[in-house]
Image (cartoon, rainbow, N blue to C red; front, side):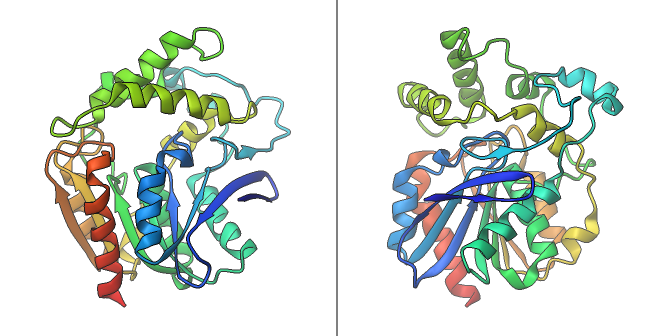
Length: 298
């Protein structure tokens, strides 16, 4: 474990597994700490022979963003941003976040790796693979999207649950926890048991480990400011696997098939009953999907 200091960010990372194995980098989603790649999942990947690198994206968990902009505010209204984006200069882009992966690998002396991104992390992974194909052995996109604006969008109420919190954890701990639990339950999928007690524990652990300097709104601005470009995907000549749930309420299945239809070498696996979350009981299946796909490409 350790930190790397970049020009305007500090990235925290941890490594699981032995050094002389194939390297697999896990890229988290919007405002999602690396802790959501849970230990049993990481251990299963390590047992398959991978050296697994996890990290917190900038402005999440223990990773921070450095700015001297006096107009960089802490909070904002999502509706206000959508209607008046000029009021909110973009502090950084998803391309900058993709460069964080490149800089992390360079700092560790790793020339190339298998990249696995979930949700927004999948979009960051696509940008990384497009910019640095020689550093990308394979690409796995979990419950992700191309962010093509023509694709079906999630329900506004669900987006509101994800981005608009009415309570701060420090000021109103229970309300904050309840809101986060409510969102996770809404995206979990109906087939798998949702463990509310475990989710509460994870929320508290994440709140306790995160830096006081992270500003979640900056990641939201980076995502919403991303301009879809089909050429990014059509130029991806990297073996790609999209794994998606048929009950994903944020990115429905059309998002997975759009990836398949746009990326030249993309396969799709649909998980029955999976939503926009990774249930514990799916860990063995997902690990097998990823390891089998990588083995096949080699």
